[in-house]
Length: 299
Image (cartoon, rainbow, N blue to C red; front, side, top):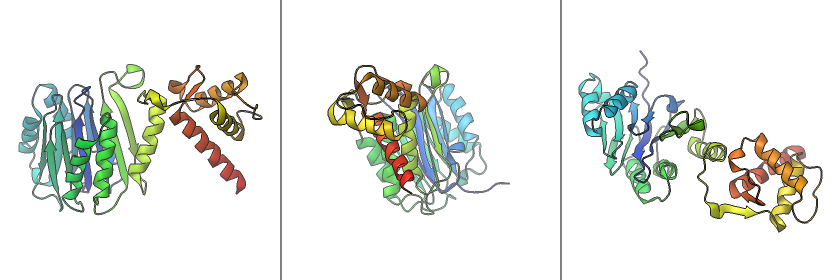
């Protein structure tokens, strides 16, 4: 029998503005995203960890779908589990009611905090400050659920996190028809299975995912492609081989074609524009890739 314990801190939460539901987690355990986070749009979100009972995920979501509250679901899952004192689970339902359980046999430090629309929980942590910091960050951060979940993860790590270290992280956010082409509810589903700095790596991946599939960027972050911006964009496109030479002042049509090709090659069609502007995220990504290529060529 596999008895490996997931030393983990996580948050299950609901966005009160649009009803998004999600889980974010970090662990000194590989591929934590395959075990801990479970969520279904308009139903709820569940994090199951410690000596994790993975069946808590699908069973809990089914009970929530039947109309049970988060608190009642936790009580039922725990009551029917002979190893409940080794388990840890956090649940939030579609109404924002949250509940959690930390078994008495979970390894220290272990505990949870339940607030309005969220449950933070963790085991084998540096201390209680990990979950209290997560809760404070979640409550005080502005933005959508993705922003607030990242804030909670970072705050938990800054407070000491998993006392065994860092290895993997994951984030799952669901909304009705929020997935690719509306074919699923998986609005954001990203994982880092093994990395020395998994939270920062998860955030890096989320930014690429955002440019590829989402539309979260603030319109105030649009840049007009003129002056220095036009010059730097062209220089980057030349460095990456999309343009043979900088065309000079302005941003001629062939430079725009080159930029569109770069955007298409990187699957950023979601951020394609024909109004002489570029998203800050695309601009930053383009310049970063150009710098990386130049650095490789210098070696």
